[in-house]
Amino acid sequence: SQQGEEDPQALSIQEGENATMNCSYKTSINNLQWYRQNSGRGLVHLILIRSNEREKHSGRLRVTLDTSKKSSSLLITASRAADTASYFCATALIQGAQKLVFGQGTRLTINP
Amino acid sequence: DAGVIQSPRHEVTEMGQEVTLRCKPISGHDYLFWYRQTMMRGLELLIYFNNNVPIDDSGMPEDRFSAKMPNASFSTLKIQPSEPRDSAVYFCASSFDRSSRGYTFGSGTRLTVV
Image (cartoon, rainbow over all chains, first blue to last red; front, side):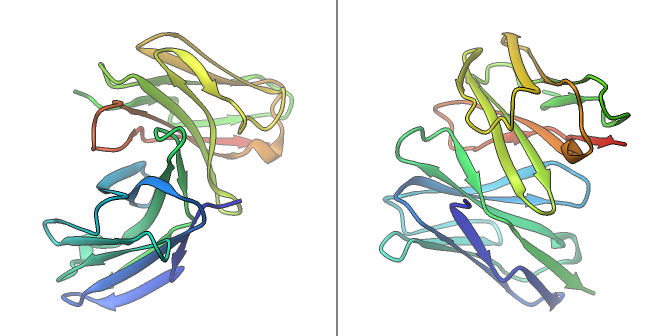
């Protein structure tokens, strides 16, 4: 069964708007990571947030983690057409922290 | 570094044939992972290695699948005999234990079994 579930499954916004994607998971984690996948390509690591962190920034990306609610969000500010991709959250469990379990992803489309 | 290198990029084979997928991880990375991606099941972890030793193969679908890592710079995933339901994109990824940079994925091998 999937550890992480993204919401929404698909999101379509206008260029320049902010995009927010959510991820919920079931069991305690060591860290949570977000990846991007462009069509026909491999996944690219975006950001890692550890279980003792609540918020992290990287450029136009902002990730939050709420371990009490077992949820995370990824915010992309000032979206660009090049941000069009699928975004996946992945959880590393406390035991075997190198093993990542991926959610089903959010398909983000940025309209010019 | 050239990143994680997978070959071939595309493979079309007939049911019953043996298929071998190859992966070269990033030099210095001590973990290697094989994932399979399909529309129905998403990304599934098949097996992973640490320092060339298989750690967890619980995701390997059945005995038709086998994986090896003979040295730190090479791994193979073999399917014998292949079946149409094995059609998927197979990704190899590598990582460094004490890094916060997550996995580095290869470009994948798109396998079609007809």
